[in-house]
Length: 56
Image (cartoon, rainbow, N blue to C red):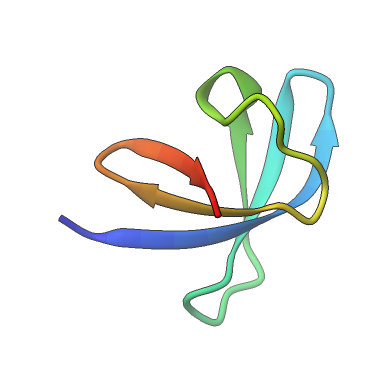
């Protein structure tokens, strides 16, 4: 199973824009906040593993 790392670039209502930090990429991933840990804020670091996001 793969593991990916993200930083929360911005939060817009019920969605957050995530940017991968483990590879070189300028693309943002739009993710529903319901799928993310409740206490995230802009600049939070996340790990995606086993189809879940974890605050690191």
